[in-house]
Each structure stands twice: as C-alpha cells, then as structure tokens.
Image 1 (cartoon, chains in turn yellow, brown):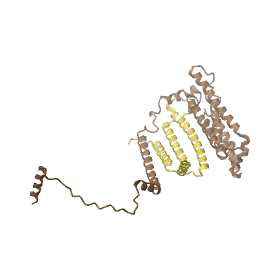
Image 2 (cartoon, helix red, strand yellow):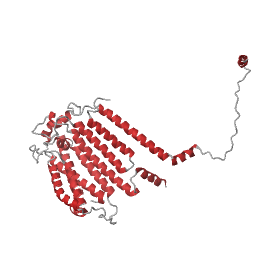
Image 3 (cartoon, chains in turn cyan, purple):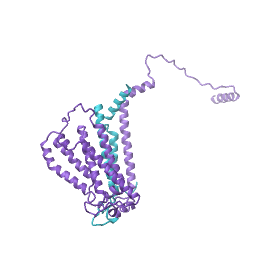
Image 4 (cartoon, chains in turn orange, blue):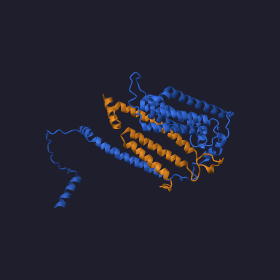
Length: 125
Length: 298
C-alpha cells in the first residue's frame, strides 16, 4: 500500500465509482441498467481526470489581468480530455440506447438473458 | 511357532519354492437389475436442465462480485501510489501545460486557455470529436428511422400533451436558454463555455420547445433538411478551416488571419467561427437524438 490513498480522496472515489459501474455491467441483466453502469464508469473517469489536473490554490486556466505564468493556473490538458470523454460518452449512450430500443421492438423484453435464449432458439430452428 | 514358520517360508521363498498367493474374495455375481442406471452423460444432461441454471446464476454472481472487488482493490492500491492530489510538482504538470499556459494567449489569442488548446493546438482532436457526434447521430438515424413511409404510424400517439404548466414555464425559460447558449457560444474564447456546452444548452432549449408545444410547431422551423445542411456545412467548414491552418502551419506560411486584441469578441482568429460550427453541430445533434428517439423522424 502506498502512502497517498487517503490524501488522493478524489481518485479513490473515482475508482470506487468505476468499480460500482463495472459491477452494474456484470450483475444487471436489464440492458438499460447496463447503459447506466457504463455512464457511471464514464463519470468516474471524468472525476479522475479533473482531479489529476487540479493544483491547490490556483485558478481555472482563463487568463486574468494578462498574467501568463504557469504558477497561476491549473493544468489545462485534463480539462480538454474530459471534454473529449463527455462527447464520446454521449455518443456511445445514444447509439446503444437506439440499439436497445430496436431489440425491445424485436423481442419485447429488456432482459439480456431472455433475449439470448430467444436468439439461441431461433438459430436452432 | 510363528517365527519358525515364517523363517521356513522365507527360506522356501529364497529357494524359489514358495509363491505368494493372495486370497481373493469371492466376488458376488452382478445381478441383472431392473433398475435403470443412467450413464454419466445422461445424468449431466438432467442436471443441466434442472439444477444448472440456478447453480450457474449463483456462481456467476459470486464470481462477478469477486472479480469486481479484486478490480477495485487493484485500482485502489494503484491510487495509493499516485502522486499527491493538488501538488504542483506532480509529473502531470510538465512542459506541455507550461507551454500552453505561457504561450497560449500570445499564439492563439484566446483568453480561455482550454479553448485555445482544444481549438488551436489540438484542433484535430476536436474535429474528430465532432465527427464522433455526427457518426453517432447518423447511426441513430439509421436505426430509429421509420421503415415505411406509407404506413402512417400516428406520431401524435407519443406527442406530449399540452400541459399548461410545462407550456407556461417553457414560454419563460426557452428565450433565456437560447440567449444563454448564444452567449456561451460567442464568449467561448473569453470565459468558461465554448461550442460543446453551448450546443448542449441550446439543444436543451429546442428539446424543451418540442416537448412543450408539440411536434408540429417545431417541425415547421427545424426540418430534417435544415438539420442535415447545417451539420454537414459546419463540419465541412471546420475541416476546410483547419486544413488551411494545418497547411500553412506545416509550411511556415503566415495564415493572414489577424488574432485581434485579446479579450474582444472578434479576436483569436479562427477560434470563434470554429466554436460556432461546433456549437451548431452539437445543438442539432442533441435535438435530432431527442426527436429520433421520440417520434422516429426529425
């Protein structure tokens, strides 16, 4: 165990959230809830990145009064990465929800196990 | 005398006269039973059909919990070895962010360093993001669009009821939402905001309009053709503008686009038009997600 588990509490929370989302993906047979789990994992990663970019006592990276010194602002790179992550998360959610809606129209259930049994039965015939 | 007989027998054995014979129990003959003994394979088949689903369900649950707890444990151990939170000397804060902060205003003209970074230094990344959104909306359109045009599924079935509360609240909120979105869009290089957040706010305004006043009124303004034209036009403009600046930058030719005075709205070169392009793409993508999901067409 390293020394920084409790002082890195944002990262710790992000990792626990990531685990919760991953468990949701495993344990929920409902497809909508699987998408919710995926979104929880996304949020954990945003939290992690935002926490990595933060520096104590510094301002958001918007130039104030013409001060362009590194010691005045936090790291801008993780903020840009979070932006990318949010966009990709939204796109993945939209596509997967539309696929789920199609599946529901075909099989009239959201339970993944039932859908798999139906698919198997169909392929046997 | 036991010992003697034993020694005798040993001698006989050494001489090769005695052969060890083991007594064999008389085996009872197997009765031909009327009882049918199932083979292992058949027993497995029965077990598979009756008890296996429950067994595997429990085993799956237990093993997945174990896997997830192990994952969380590994990640937490890794976190405990990460550099301390909020420390300025962390390896994350290296010369790359130093360069962005110290030269960003001078080179891109954007007061907001993050906007200057994502729309100038890393503009290719943002172009890819806009295309991810565009591809997602194309995929949703492909999946959700109604197959038959002749078969008129009553789109009014899912149309929101004219709820007076929603309607009156929307009448107040929508102008402010749209104005705030435009403000975020035009000030993206000066203050927190930018194309993506502005697009999300304006898209929310359009969605609220659609759900408060019904599909009919919004489809008079926002048609499928308009959405496609604006989205494609914005993406093409973005690609051309960034292609121009990549070409000139790689060949060390001056771009000829004035950066303007830092802090003014019309400044920072290409960043403002690119922000507007991204904002329009995000607005119409958000709205088209909503309308495709709710009624199957834009």
